[in-house]
Image (cartoon, rainbow, N blue to C red; front, side, top):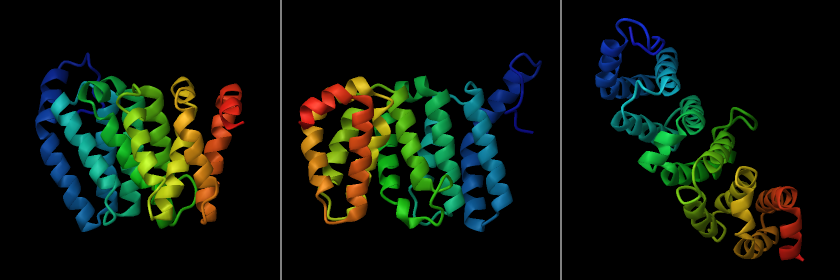
Amino acid sequence: ALPIYLESDSPNYKEQAELFRVAVPDMIDVMKSTIQAGDDKQVLQCFEVFQGAIEKGNLLADTHFKDVIEFMVLLMTSAEAPEESRLQAVYLLISAAEMRKMKLRALKLGEHLCHAALLMAAAIDDFEDEDERNPGRQALVLLDKLSANLPPSQTLLPLLKTIGSYAQDADWRKRKAAGLGISMCVEGAPDFFSTQLEPLVPLLLRLLEDSESQVRGGALQAVSSLGDELAEDFGKEGG
């Protein structure tokens, strides 16, 4: 049995934990196979194992932790993967952002995760569920957690460059994601955003005049979030 529920003071913990660490690459391969085979029950069990490992923390050495995170990013952003698997991958990454933020910082995975989450946010309208079980919508939650728990140098600074690019993209879904991305990150890092209003205001004004109504809606959410969190500063810049 995999030791994800072992207590650290149990007699065999170290030995079984080491067995788990060694098995991680094979476990990732098993998960790939079960997803390809469409074995939903087995896939869910695989996610539960990795979720337990994230919660335990010390079961994953840095190298294997990075392997798991990168596999989840690949799965989350794969258009060929089942929607449920993509959703579960986002859930696991949210847990990592909340519980293992120091490992994410040390391995400098924040920028990669933010870019992947914004890409997922652009795909919100591709999924059947419109609410909490929409992988794209949960990717916005991931952005929120990353911006709140990791330093701006690893998350928000590179993310804003991508948002600027998305805001000018020919694909209206990316333009929409630009506004939604700003909206979700403001609450977790208001001090940072108070220093970024000069470039953000004209960007949002352009999006508010976009020909696509959903893009305008995303920009409106961003303006609302900035107004709520930075009322005085935003009023000066927008006025």
